[in-house]
Image (cartoon, rainbow, N blue to C red; front, side):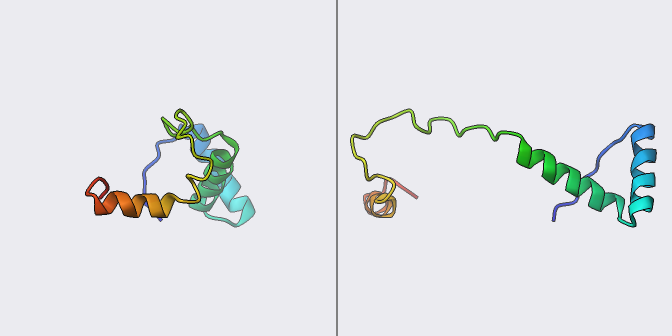
Length: 78
């Protein structure tokens, strides 16, 4: 896990403390759960360039390791 700091409005902080106490869970646990739920529901941005080019080969993904090994031998991939 990574430690981070979050600044909350006082009314949100109070509600969080009350919820944690009522549920017998820590505030950190409630925040982690809320963020996990949110990040799973939001569409992730696409990686730039994915799907923009056509190699003309239908099996490129199946041959990826072979292609990268060959490129590494030629010094074009590190």
